[in-house]
Length: 81
Image (cartoon, rainbow, N blue to C red; front, side, top):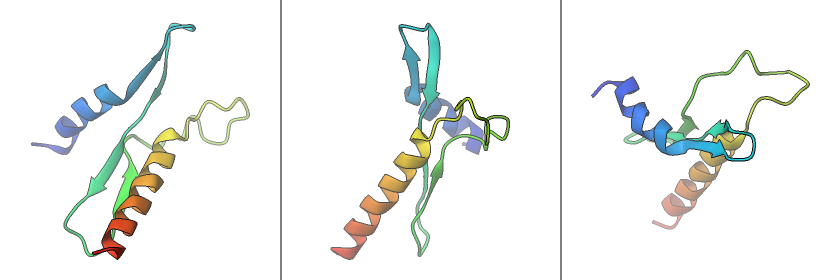
């Protein structure tokens, strides 16, 4: 399976629809690379350069927070083994 094909179901499950506004609120997801000597997590979307640094706060940090939480959880598990 190709990289982008694997992202389709993950992104679909991570989409959040806001019933009040009738708009998609965010797309959430985490990419975890296994088999490395170090823990690697990342957001499961592009860089969003068009949203970065804007005052109106259009960028959503949820995926970044989730990626960090998974990395911390994996580090704790690894430490206990």
